[in-house]
Length: 193
Image 1 (tube, rainbow, N blue to C red):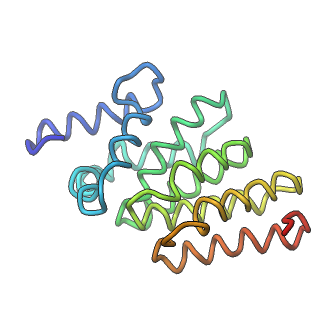
Image 2 (image 1 turned 90 degrees about the vertical axis):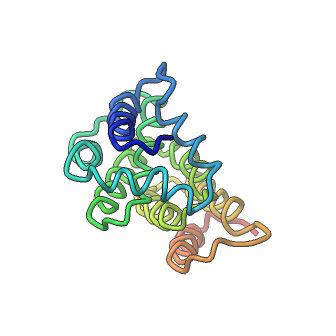
């Protein structure tokens, strides 16, 4: 994006401020598309290292505010928030990854249809931190479900997107969360052969 420190800080600040604005050219949909096309090293260089510099500012405030104060407004806004929070999962700071994970779980429990959106958005990105925590958030939201049809839909989507691929991502925790989602579905007799 930029190698100039001042420009990068301005960009990251602006991107966070505009992340949930559906009309912004640098909202979280743009960020997701941009980072999804990068490999792990590129994501770390252009995103993770830069948000790491601003943890005590808007980055932490974004995750904490949505964890503590989120109230569902509409599906499109929730998707934009989830996309932004999803990329905060790349953080190497466990506290901020935890805050983002908890905020994601909270949003996913407001509208279970968002779980499928989140699965399809994050389980195949090129950042293992993101995949691991995305799967943890999906698991956290799934165990709050009581509708067997929805549980089946979520577990089938996890299987199709994460496990039924040529090469499963090499992350033991992500695999374990995925297995637990499928086991939860089996427990509820909602996953057919």
